Image (cartoon, rainbow, N blue to C red; front, side, top):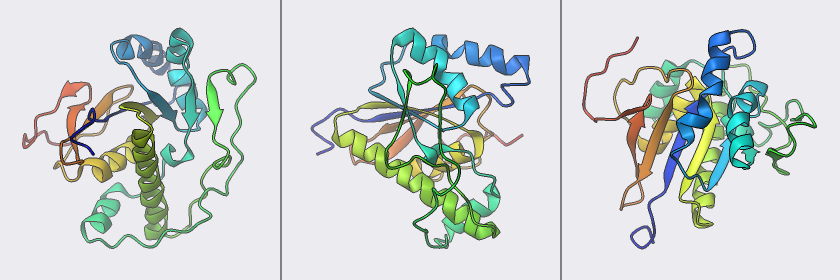
Amino acid sequence: DVYKRQPQVVVLVRLPLALRELALGEEQAAAIPEKLAGYQFDFIALSPTWRTRQTILGFLEKTGRHGEIWPELEEFDVDEKRAHELLAANAVPSARPDIFSGSKISVSAEERPFFIIREDAEKQFKLRDGRDERIADCVNSLRAAIARIKQRQLRGDESILLVGHATSGQLLLHLLVGDEGELPTIKNAQMWMAEEQPDGTFALKVYNDEPFEPHVDRGKP
């Protein structure tokens, strides 16, 4: 009963782009532990990419926590505008059961104390070739992530940190809270936060590290 328990909070941090190549990305990643210091997370999940792990590793080391790798959160190279069109028309193609049939997920020996690979998701996704089919794989993967968020909720996790990417992160937000109008791109190493409402839906509370005010024309870059 959502009225008798604490509302769930979901926070997503977008990892810095090109972390390996850009000093700016390294500086942004180094600032993550301080950015998150004021939060108490019951559960942490992240995309399986190397860059994502490096982004959150400092926070995990500092706090003694670990993160669970969710291939559902990986970045998807899809047409985001077309994805929103299909969602608005309720025309997303059907899911397929073998989306996670790509490369096996692995972490280095040094990382193992901090990252858990789910037994039911040991491989990365493998998208179909068609434009709408790729979008379907992306959307249905993110819907599976939301289902897992709700499962964590049933276990009593009230605050969940997700570490992900730009396109998939914004589509996940759309699926979680619905249409919030034209939002700018999630900036590097910044975050959004959605909070559960009394009726069980989620509302956007923070976007790009700033308090979110609905129905404000923010434009897009």
